[in-house]
Length: 135
Length: 163
Image (cartoon, rainbow over all chains, first blue to last red; front, side):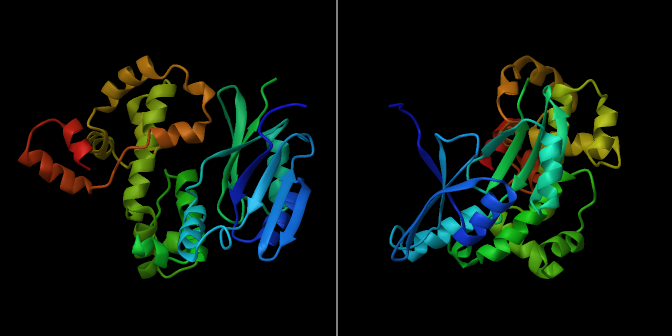
């Protein structure tokens, strides 16, 4: 077996909306989508990265009380969650494809540090940096 | 904290959009009316909500972003200080220099030589993170800062720490 990080999760405001974004717009695949009462364990995967799952979790019961959930929703909506980085082979091509699908870019592709990077947000407010892999 | 809890996440998400737009084009003019349109709220509502959400009024946030960009350009480019001033949205070199000193406690030229000496290794960190780490703490009004400075001439670094 190989050891390492298996799942890292994000908070999203709506899991159906998150699926529409990460699967339909970004091209990720659903790995697990299981409901248990109100709780929904939902993870997606990058098609080129089968060893890693990105969890898309909604703050709320039974994990959080309403006050905590409300704070978490506010923090996500303010874009205050930690940075996320997506590596792509061609940043401008990915930018074009994703823009056409309606992804909200906060920064257009810029050449710097010998590569190209752009920035986008998911509908909830999570911010992604999209960096072109150095060759 | 109560204020944070009272702000609707949907509104916060739209306020974030206005903040993102300032980040993307901080050299442009961002009157409250324009920002309010991005967020889909009234101008009067916008300024108050923005400050509640992000801790600083929108215009003050814009100033920090401009100084942050100028700082990066001083560090990473060969552009002259005049060019940098106009590139980052200032109408005059004088205003730029004064605001820069008020916020960072240094002259643009001083920062340029210091930044070059200490910036090694940052190319490994995504740029957005570097920018945020270098963002000046502007939690007091520039005018307020000047008043404090006049009161106690202890050097600007101290004042910065007082916040």
